[in-house]
Image 1: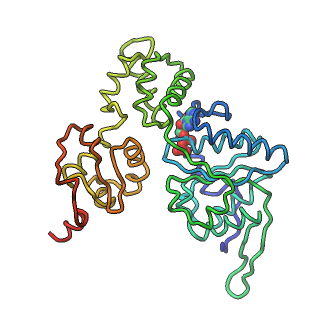
Image 2 (image 1 turned 90 degrees about the horizontal axis):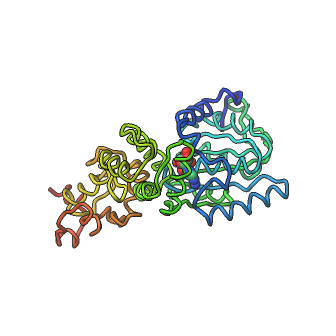
Image 3 (image 1 turned 135 degrees about the horizontal axis):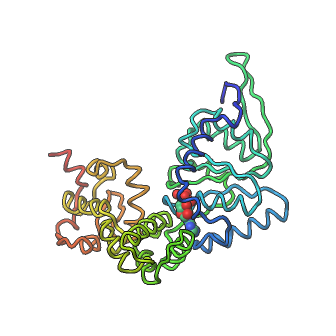
Length: 359
Ligand code: ADP
């Protein structure tokens, strides 16, 4: 494992990186729920967590390690913070891409205090050497550390206090099974129900002191992709539009005009989402088309396509993931008002990627 001296925790690059990430999110901070009661929606998951938290507190133990799965913006980071607050313990945060060397992770682990909640975002991107270090820390509350070099090198085990690891990912399939098996509790986030989105919108509007009518919040809820982060962003924009119009509240009129100007449609799709569907339909005759080919056509990375855009398109019944690639559904044709070509739905042989190779 690591050969360098374990750095002072305050100086690790990863922590600084994470703090920066949180600072960038400052505008959002006031809207972040602090307690479980303010964390709206995801009821089944929340109820179970409440039980596990109070049981751990009653026993005076650290909470079991927690694995959070779900698309971006659904509240994984928020929930991790809420859990720490409910437990009344320290919270440390970083993200896997910020952890470059073993010393980056060791620096944080040696600084955890009893029962600390340590959150690693994008845990599927953790490097294998660091993963190994994390297994041991999670299971034995010890840190393996190599001192010296060459034949005189030896491993020492440094004890660390029992802590709670919270790992979050948008891609559970990319997390190794040994790592998954170290988590005692798994929470799977789903897109929020319209009624929960409405409640989140009303709460945020209250905090932002931006009065909103019931029909406006309903309309905004329907266009927020079942995602609190999107809802919060849209509320701010609607507040701007209301201010520009000199209207004292965000009304349905303001929302209709605002969404129109932002090119967000009734399903919450943005221009780019529609472009994805249009490319599949028009360039690849409805699919199937492989993710990589599609990403190249869009000038986007596969990760962004898979993490950010696809989950909501699939959830909305507009896109299908098949073993041969992505396909537009009949609903996508209807939504874009495009004629459905019968031939496109019966592509017998290979994918269009195959055809591209042959041509
Ligand atoms: P993730 O870590 O999954 O990408 P975040 O935890 O950063 O998502 O959440 C994005 C924003 O959405 C937060 O700043 C918070 O204001 C809001 N949010 C998330 N979940 C909820 C919730 N359940 N109730 C209210 N607001 C929420």
